[in-house]
Image 1 (cartoon, rainbow, N blue to C red):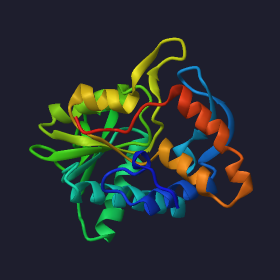
Image 2 (cartoon, rainbow, N blue to C red):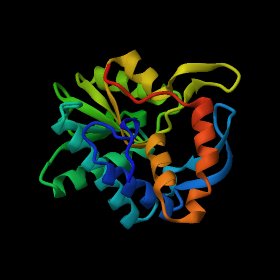
Image 3 (tube, one colour):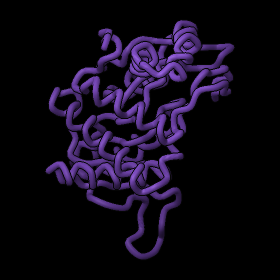
Length: 242
């Protein structure tokens, strides 16, 4: 299998990345066709993590997050001892990832936020493990504009935590902004530069291209040309530490 330097993130085995992409394809989460992005671009592929909506699929997804986090920590890219899931999608991602980490011998506390502050019972905005003084990694599916990350950072800092980084499922590796006014950086890169912490992804667009270039399935390989053209038009480089 051909592996370019661009298609291999530090600390994450190529086999894990390819396994994840094949898993996403099998679940219908990763699809090919013609899709309009939030930036107004016509994308030849689409990734919808909301379709990981059965127990077995969520368990497998969580294990990919756990593997990626442990690899990033082993390489010194990201050091954390708590997980945070932004409401609402991140709640299931963080809690299931905590379970997957525990199954691998790494028991980490997790927490999530409410959309509205509760004024009765235990009250407050946060639910879960205490975050004061801890290094916290935000667990999410993708980064589109960075707004959600900014909100999470504010919540975590108010709770006395240090944000260690963000862990996402897929880095689209494309320019931020809009089709009419693109940025030179991707949304993930902008988040990393703005906040000064790393964004780590299970897999990236470069990994997807490697899969399409090396697959022996003609139906899958047929999408390589359009995805490569999209990458050439809108692509940016790899994520780099801040």
